[in-house]
Amino acid sequence: MGGTDKPGNPRRHPSAAEAAAGQELRLGVGLHLLSIAPFGSVAAFSVIAVASWTAAVVIGLIPAGLLVPFIWATRRGFDAEPALFFWPFAEITCAALVLMEGVALVGREAARDRRLVAARQGVR
Image 1 (cartoon, one colour):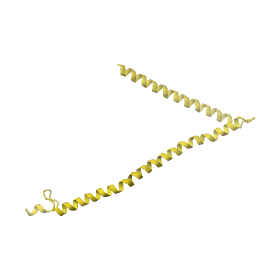
Image 2: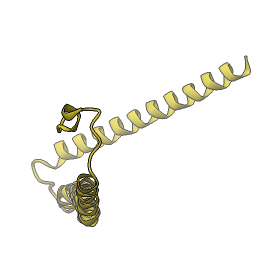
Image 3: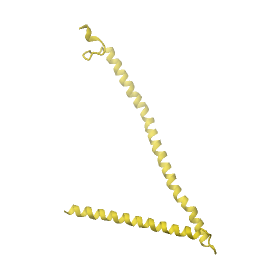
């Protein structure tokens, strides 16, 4: 039976001191995890906040980028002789607005069609 007390033997029972040392180790890991949890959650919220602010700034730059040429076109459109690029700019802008409206209408019709199909399938 002298071979059963060797470390690494699966049938070996640890002594009370070894069991206590193992408990201290596990308790220490738990305390470490609990002590870093607030920092981890603050870091996660910080990443989310930075991503949100970045998205807000990018989304805010789109109207700001449109504002300058539209002010220019408004100012030039009321001149006695509009600037050289006024009419092409006006035509491109109107075409883009019509295209966006068409895309929105197609999307709205597709959504309506999906609802109608779903309603018909639900009746059957």
